Length: 138
Image 1: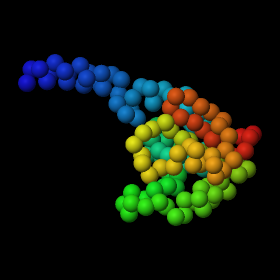
Image 2: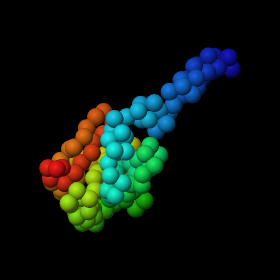
Image 3: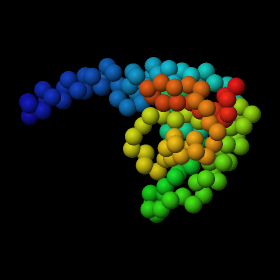
Image 4: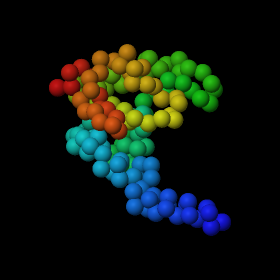
């Protein structure tokens, strides 16, 4: 039992100081999250991690379409159409895509999936992810 405590207590102290997951210092102080917070409130935000966007900014974000439906073990037949619908919302600078650098969300599209279907431009990038807009982003 004492051996577990020697290993566990420093880990728990670190979690208490640094946080864990989206409550970590790195995410709370992320330039990407600051960039999202600086966007106008009327923009529609789409993300591969809308839960993280809400937790870190308090702003609602919509999910990107699922490329793969895990529950039925098949590709989403409407994926391309759903991505094109997002593209319509992104036109005229009325929305953006925040793509967080996360692993483990298996049904989400990749960045390559999105950029092959929409003319997206990266307008912000750091280690935590990217912000995309349609076209030139201007």
